[in-house]
Amino acid sequence: MNSQTNPRTAGINGRPWGARARDWADIQEGGCRPVYLAVFERVGLRAGMRCLDAGCGAGMASQIAAERGALVSGLDAADNLLAIARERVPAGDLRVGDLEGLPFADHSFDLVTGFNSFQFAGNPGLALAEARRVTRPGGHVAIVTWGSPEGMEAASLLAALRPLLPPPPPG
Image 1 (cartoon, rainbow, N blue to C red):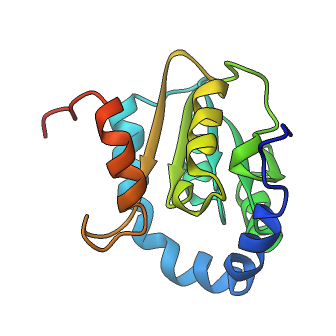
Image 2: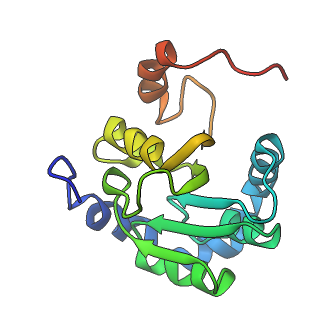
């Protein structure tokens, strides 16, 4: 953990996200499956790729990646959600932690995903820098948030990033 990490982020965010972990996993998370599949298709996820699911929650995206043969690591703030993720991905390297201080070596992953997670980081800019740090050159960082641009929690984060990003692909 570096000196710019807010060590309380996982503790603060983990409690509310983990409060109804089983309800999220059993009732809500299935609605996210098409998004997970679309991202994995877009980046060409295949067997042997190293994937970090940053903010993995109950682990449905991690499970899908593992079923496709990816080597999966995950990080989340909520112990209760990680317990479910560990049931779904027993071979995964799943850890409690903060997005602002990823406990992985530089260039460790072919793909880093953030499904509805980076906007909750205590320092989103640092969290994004960490995602970039652990992604190998030529790898992918895929961040997804839910909702219309006007109403989503990550709107300010995306507005700040817009000048730094290439144009989106067609489609």
